[in-house]
Image 1 (tube, rainbow, N blue to C red):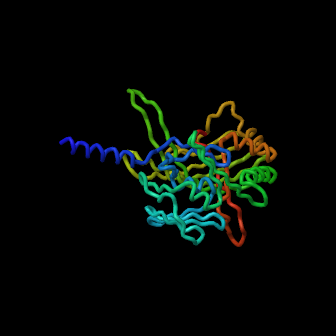
Image 2 (cartoon, rainbow, N blue to C red):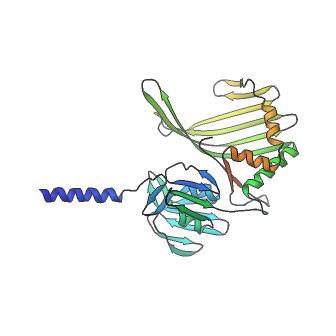
Length: 305
């Protein structure tokens, strides 16, 4: 009997030691703290991260097909399969320190191996469990943040411009409610936005189509929401579902003046403003449309903003 108990306890201990550890690992990308949508996994000295962390860090393209995950950044590519330590880096087989795996329905990949294969530099501070990533991607000797700041100034000088935006995001909400209960929910938001802006005199029209899904909702399924907004010297007007147009009450807030101030800045000031807002930028894959080549910027905003 004692021998059987000893065997069972030994098995429990082995299983406990083999269980992945979601450690308090912090991540810094080009000098800015990054908060991933899911916790990082530290196991046997290898940091595994959700696959979208790689795309946020480098602005690279990622494709998934079954168990296969492929990243492409400029001339570098890496292809790997869930459960296999063999990866194909720029056409050459290489062995990863740990195989990618599925955790809670999400693909996790080895951070250092993937990022360094795509051209980034990765550092590790064992005392603070901190990972630092440096990736200096430029276009015409400009970083993504410098290009964004320069573009903001150019838009202000042009006075009129149009924006087409693809949006993807996850919103997490947590609040205390009566009767000692708590509200803890998340929303997946995907959609597009078109906006037309004129700076002087200030006029903006925006149309937004969003699909909102609440995974833990009592009734599953995504909800489509379309909104329109007009902003001018008379105020801000929005369409609300099942209500129609309403005027937003923003007493004491001069949106027209704020917009002019934000756009009438030099690039250095604009960069500092974006940094204060917790925004960071990276270059995505260059694109070609209608015979013209375009640079693509990818923006990330801290979860605390």
